[in-house]
Length: 495
Image (cartoon, rainbow, N blue to C red):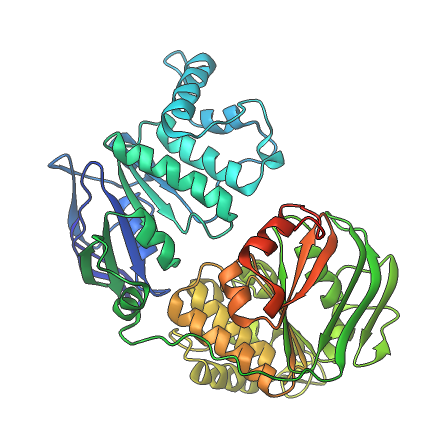
């Protein structure tokens, strides 16, 4: 890619960027949220048309106007959010858009190709399983197989480990190393610096739409140096001073609930000045626990108490009124509304209350002023309060959510996967807000699949497995090995 530029209205997303990938290369592409990484890759894959610049494959100029053009010249892309049909089988997902010469689907050829991919790249898949029944890691294998079945020799992966367990991530890395060994080129976009250092052969760093640095990954690079290249400044690890926890703010006593993963006899306490981390492999009831605390999932039995008073009929409004702020796992569809102006998304939970409305009439000036104050305080990178919410990068969306939820001074903050897919600078900022709330005597219930994050911030770690809390450990008694065994279903006594 030479001299690639792409503008969206007043925003220069990509500015005169050069990028090359050789056969056998695994290139790490880093940058803060909004640095232009995904925009550059969407130009490569034909999702966007570049305003300027050229692309060459095997030394020949190519015109890429669509994803079909990209696939035709051997470029595949696995997006952060999978593009699969859950009700169809693995094989049917692979066959979409691939009619044979007589107009019929070539099932036999696809089966043969899938078997070869499984053998060559350690991407074994059952062709007859429904995609909706697959774990997240298996769905990602299907996405990769889709590109390989179509003959991709250059594979772009955008935040591929954001929702994977450590074991699934290691399986992915083994597949990518096999691809590189067979002469493919891989572009790996990630905010997890340890993974980038462990996997890649070269690292390119973008900042503000431009290429800021390119380095060989020869063992001389460190996480702090990469973070400095990305953010233009040194980042400090979170400081968590010792604090004696105060009175209980939230108590769950043998609560059960009927969710997609049923909760069974969950007991948990969250006290003033405390951060409690919830660990678990995805799909073991963490989302249901967050929905229960937020008042979305009604309890079938047991009691929930906030600040010493039982809540007989929890609802989102009631829990919000009791001082619980919520940063949901899915920030764009559950947390905010992508089609709305940012100002309205930020005021949404209280849109029918003063100062945002009076006698049923919206006060748009107050709404914009509230959003502008949050944008300034939290350094949200956007064109202003009237920007469409869906145009913000992941890290800036997360900052906007935090600005909204912290504006009303909650006593309890429920944060689910708060740093998934956001850069190290935004992560540092988010963690600082949690610790500030802890210092002020509030409490944070932190649901995360990132064990490094949980160990850095938590005073206690509760581990979930199959809808139950199987252990509740003070941080001094927890270890990555012990928590990992509990997450895998090993009983506490054996662990």
